[in-house]
Amino acid sequence: MDKNIITINSSERSSGIPENFNVNLQHVLAKGKTIKLLQISIPNTMFNINSPNNYIDILEYENNYSFSLFIPDGYYTIDKLTITMEDLLNKKSSLGPNKYKYKCMYSPTNHKLSISSTSDFKILFGSGPNYDKSLYQVLGFTQNDTPFSSIIVGDNIINISLPDVYVRIKEFINNKYLLNGSPYSFVVPNVAKYGEKIINTIPICQEITLSESRRFNQLDIILTDHMGKQLNLNGSEYMMELSFEE
Image 1 (cartoon, rainbow, N blue to C red):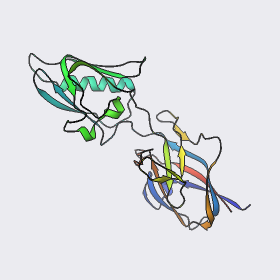
Image 2 (image 1 turned 180 degrees about the horizontal axis):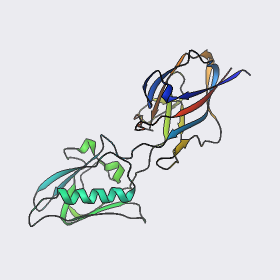
Image 3 (image 1 turned 90 degrees about the vertical axis):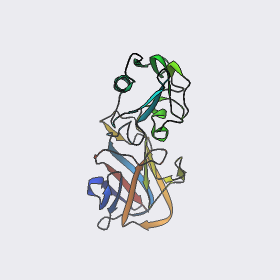
Image 4 (image 1 turned 30 degrees about the vertical axis):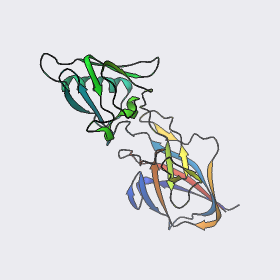
């Protein structure tokens, strides 16, 4: 069986950015009917909080005072996130004798976030000015306003994990689809810690079989999450190795 292996480095792209680029293969033998992902190495430099989903809208009952928190882009551990939120909540709360005092805590038992205050408040995940840019999913809430309370606990577990990587190579795709209906070629489970390398941990090669052998002069490669949202490696480059077999 004729077989050729090519290595693709995003830094050697013809155009685009690391997460969405075109690479020219005119000087490489890339021909085959079966394409396999042999290996891939992606720096895990993605952020778990990034635009546009950075906001939390708050309404305080006693003063009928509302304000919005903006959580800066970055990679957050649970401790860093709760400390950042608590600090911003207390800085943005209304002034005067009825100023609220907030506390953010994570429960290692049920893995949920709780936000408490000295008086009743509500979180406007459903109707706030930034409801469509809120952190409700990351924090474990639904996209609905919470009731007024001095203690509000997330509906679900907090989710600050980084996404699996879905590789879509437009020239050959699998018969599998993302949640937005877009097809993808390969999936790379992300079990790496932040700053480490994401590698192909699936024990067998992932492959795509075409109806007939084809020669490829270029490849268009996009990295997305399971929703089809393009990933952001924040400037990092990556490599993959593909085999083309007749």
